[in-house]
Amino acid sequence: MNRYAFYDFEFGILKIGYTDTAVTFLRHTKQIDSCNEHSALSDLAFDQIREYLKGTRKTLNFPYELHGTEFQKKVWNALCQIPYGETRTYKQIAESVGSPKSSRAVGMANNKNPMMIVVPCHRVIGTNGSLIGYAGGLGMKKALLELERNQTTLKEAQ
Image 1: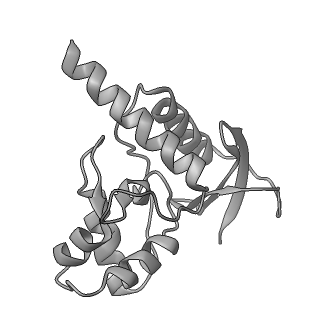
Image 2: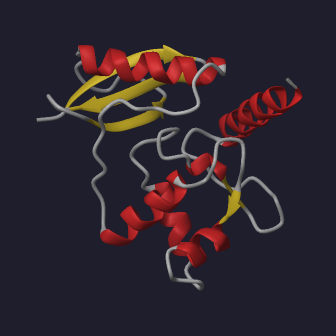
């Protein structure tokens, strides 16, 4: 059974869906729309998200499960292979999952991504380098990309 916890964060409200064993949903929302039940697992996930947003964590390792179609899971797995601080185009992701003409379907899989930030769909951009679509809004996408680039640049300068 899914339960939900809501947390204030830099971009508004973060909604975390979870079971007894794993986080199943992590998304930006505008309002609290169900029972707000914090747990040790939801707190762990939120703490790691906060560390990521502060630039002190690059990987998130709380337990989570992805539920979707086989194609969506292939796309989400490909997104998880994009290194921190880098981007890929929708076309590159389509090619990496063996469907070079499915850029639009990759975009739809990104749209259905239940685990924003963890499955880094914010790292996917248009072929011309433009920021296209993001469940948290383009402002959030831009901020996440800048955070990662700044942290990568900072590390390289040291």
